[in-house]
Length: 307
Image 1 (cartoon, rainbow, N blue to C red):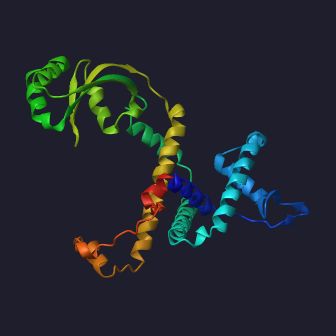
Image 2 (cartoon, rainbow, N blue to C red):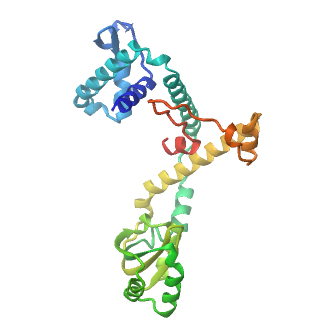
Image 3 (tube, rainbow, N blue to C red):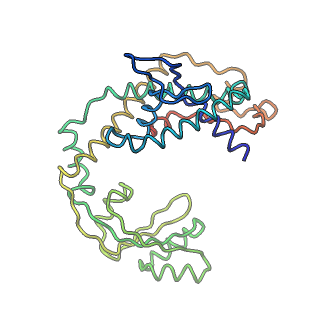
């Protein structure tokens, strides 16, 4: 419980607190509330509403809850400062990592914000190149037999004799091989895109074995029905997808530019690690134990995903 509470305090400390100190703009006070010796500003309230995605029409309804949360936050921050938690090495490191994450995200968002909207030609091209998602879209009713990887050869041998899913399940059961059967009804866009061309060619009752690291999934097509989407209906989803794709391309291009122009030099044993050589056990850095869980530095991929 102590660790959980401390994490909450640290998370709150990581949020920038904009103190107005009684400042007035245009003769209007920018203070929304006074909490002991601290203040909650109008800017903080507006920022909290913005983060929640509250529009102007619903602002008054959301305001009491937002103000209550900000008061609680201010009380926790003041209590944390009284205990000088900001001087704790672990807390200081977490605050620094939070600052770095915010700066990295802000730079990527600013850069990605300059991209233009996908063109009509791009939308039309994507629509035409993915008929299984749009013009030939179907809703599939499937049965899925999940088999452990140890039985992969058994599945292969049985399917060479018969493609009947019940017979396959029975043969595996006789050998005491655990299986599970799932009933699935999904539209094309909720299935792996690489699976769609194969599903389009299958007849009802056909089975398709799909191997993966965990085992084998044998998919049987029970039924499917046509449910096409025209280009006008598909446009918002395609525009969003292409915008995300363009943004990721811009981000990856900028990262490459920055890396190509930077001098990065790993020092000591970390140079060996960067070269793919394992560090000696005695030289590996050991994390200091603490009741404060460190805030993991986000990878670029995680930052992009959260944008």
